[in-house]
Length: 125
Image: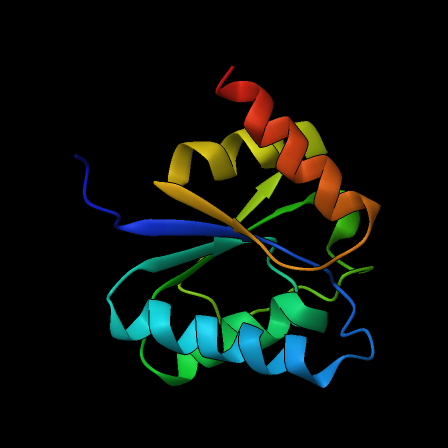
C-alpha cells in the first residue's frame, strides 16, 4: 500500500455559517501538518480553503495551492504557500491536483466542490 504523502482537500471558498465546519477544517489542517502530509488545495486565502491552509502553515506543514489564472483575484490567492501553481483553466487545475495528491478529502462547499469531487472520482473509473 502506498504511503500518503499528500492529500487534496476540496471545499468552499466561503466560510458559510457553521462554526463546527470551520473548526473541523482548522483541525484537519493541523492534523495534516503534524502527520507531515502535504496539503494540496485550491490556493485561496479565504473561506474554508483558507482556514485549512492557515492551520497547516501555522503548524509548519507544507501547502501547495493550484489555481486557474482567472480565479487569482476572485478567490484572493494565498501568497504564503510553499508552492503556488497557476493553470489555464479549471480542468487543468483538477488534473494537476490529481497528479499531486495521494488521497482526497471533501469538506462542505457549493456546487463547485461537488463538481471537483465528481471529476476526480471520474478519473478513477
